[in-house]
Image (cartoon, rainbow, N blue to C red):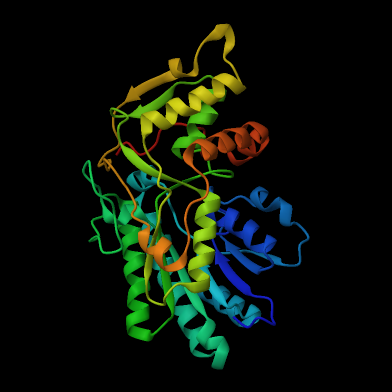
Length: 355
């Protein structure tokens, strides 16, 4: 990108959890962001309240599948990059309704790629050389691990849920648009994110919200499913670094070096809440834990090998899990009003995705 001009990025899904954190950080660093979000249940303008009136943030309510709108945004704002966060992302919801995941994650990504390709073809000189399309994906495309090992960028795809299958398809489309049309793409596959502004259907904010309400804390199966936890701000920093210096056409895995069984995550949250928001009569929050029937097709373990990103681009996570989970619990305690506003009636912390 030319150093003399302010960079402009078209960010899709920038009112969601990871996208919203990314937009806040990007604008704070001096980037002008055109933020396209469909504002589904998981998209929330409240996340972006700090940017109200900021000339470097242009919010557009719309869908990545709206080719006319996307083309107009590209030609009107002339971004240096497209960063695609827009996706249906919850495995449980994909079990109940896979069609929406195909529509957004596959059909929508295809439309976005075609618009980006056509826009990129019309650029010239340095602007064309500098343009990037960065696609944000997940480690779930790789399937499930045994007790040892970790996913690398060479791990074969083996998605096990409708969600991960839809993301795998979108990853393959991104790769194909590079090899077929020359579109300068980058792909990142991340482990489980956590942190501020996460919709309360996901494990960590769900447990916090239920615990604060004194409700049972449901644990799938035996609670020993393992995930690698990545603090969202570290993930955003990794994406910016890949956008800045990643090799065109390459994939970079992003992990937090923080493997934890689900039951350990829940018990850690309980301990933090015992100290910060004690239950009546000296009860411990762990007493709220219950074990429930496992999720259909529940992957046993994910672990990310992010050595390529560390070696080539110098990125590494800066927030360990102990710091990150304490910060996250404190954020939700300070922002209970945000949680109440996002629970709009379509979701009330109930269990979904039982098949």
